[in-house]
Length: 423
Image (tube, rainbow, N blue to C red; front, side, top):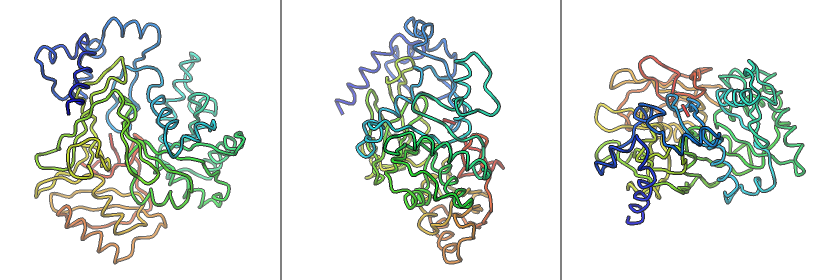
């Protein structure tokens, strides 16, 4: 504990001249820093002579987060800050560092918002407008990374989309002397592409990656199982955000390990007595926007229920997406996912619609496009009743729409059946 306190103390010394922290320094107490407070007075509330000079020389930039896990937020950071954090973990990861060392290209299959962001960056470098339909060069982030997706909803990819993406992946694979490439993905987008390739009779020519990272949202257990059945290479999860970089990585067996250089974490129960914890981060990793006691908006659980950030066993969703129960307590995305994975391994996409405090509907699609069998349905309804106190009707659907952010909402609130909040 002394080491942790000293680390936080050292961080505070580094932010003394930043206006947003002056009141806290004078008071000797740092309240939790919420996202709206970051935006108040931005960027003047963060401005120092050092930052002004960095912005002038291009060593720092003002950007908006991509808006895929919470509302878009203004950020000051070094160029390609998140990418640098990703590359570091890839290059050091015990299971997949070899693909970095062998010079593998990174192909990214994630939200169309991410692709459009890359196209805008490239257009800005050229002093031009981003094209409506980004070409191959427009979608290359740097010498190592290429983005593929051009549609909001991957369920709407057609044969032409699938053939184009497989062709681009194959070209990257064939350019490597050992036929290797690294696949970066949102896990649900990758699962859609695998299913689409199957449906098009193109799975046999899907170029097999040498390593996979998914890093964009919680991966449902059924989706992880599905991908592990299809790909023999290590599949790694990263946890982080645009403003923080990456904080944890999994090994190929799913155990999480911290990567907390220049960081200090606190886990605070979402309510008294809860073992669901809100993640509070202090970080000076980004020298131009150091964050002290920042609420990331994510939740976690630990192996023993303690608030020890070194004992996190999983990340269980967004704090604002907790479902607070009439009988007390809350369930997270991960809790519903546990019940679904235990009862019905064929469920792919799902969305819970609460109806009052005692009832709900669970919309779901499946990998085989068929409703789950009656025994699985009974088991799932029973788990939801016992775990959340909800009488739940199950409704098989051919399609569940994705949100405008390019992510799926596991929980529908106030009639909005599709939207999560950004990156």
